[in-house]
Length: 456
Image (tube, rainbow, N blue to C red; front, side, top):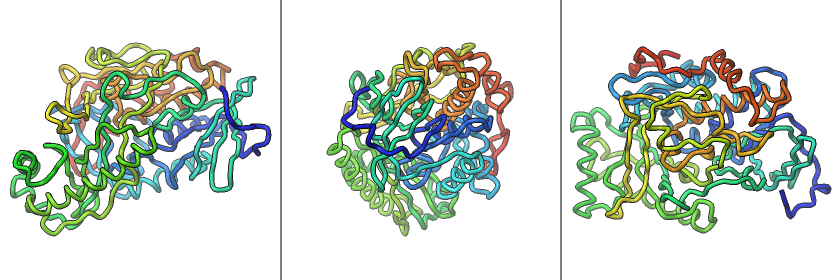
């Protein structure tokens, strides 16, 4: 692990048992999982001024809690349920059955969720450093790692025994010299999306005039006739917890590298440009949107994939389509492969492939352990998966499940003095079940009535 830094001259910011790099939904749940035993110190670093990552920066829906189809089943539980339960206390959620092919969505207020993440982390005793970015890694030996971070006061070191990389871009693994695959090297990388929200939408009029089916037809017509320069023929616009407001996943920016500073800058500008093209389209063409306006863009453009770490095991498309749950599985996933990419006609579209017979598959513990590592776990969208498998298992329900497993695993590893790759997975599964995790396909369908949060 080489570095341009003189580590000896950098002051120590903190010493901790576990460092979680990245405060997205996976990282937050990982930190909560480690603190379940209340034995070990956990420090979470996050580059923004609030936790949540994609869940608070750009989205307002948790997918992956339920399988898609006419008889949805709940396949995510445990620590992720605590997040939704806390939102439900203030009526800041509702369920949208089988939305846009991905299954029932748990819609929430992202502004309230920022506070919920704050509350849960603080209540668990997780120390949080916001506005803090990882910039270098050095292995000290004796199972200790020194990480250099930067914030407005300068450069500092964090000394830790274990690391959970929840950065999204596998920043720790990259800086530590661990092996990974970069999206786009073998398969086209999924496109990026700037989400936007609009207010003063007459949703009753919208539904009377045909709702989603009507909007889809008008979008395709606008592309074919060239009346509005939309980047794709399909997209989603759904109601929010806030009345009279909608949120979108419509913008698509392809063929730009989010790990290249100038290409990412171009992607941000292109995303904003497309958002206002959509605003004009909605105002001109969609009944109920005549008096609506954009009231907010995502804090940054949404990035679906960059680096994917090579783990002790790797989730593949064949694993997803097999519908099997092996005895080393740490969570379930029933989400379809949802691949956002450019079609043959140059339009950005979404390609779907579902787990056969409405089934689920299990995700192996080895997918969250970088190959050969004893002190590092990796969760969220940079875990060990192929492009196709990643396009299925990147929903926030699953990334929170990955975080839960990693957090509980770090605590177990510290208890037993195990290396990450040598952990007793059978024992980990028992702990996951004790905490409310779901590791077997449920027999009964879930209650997905739109007025509440059920089967938690």
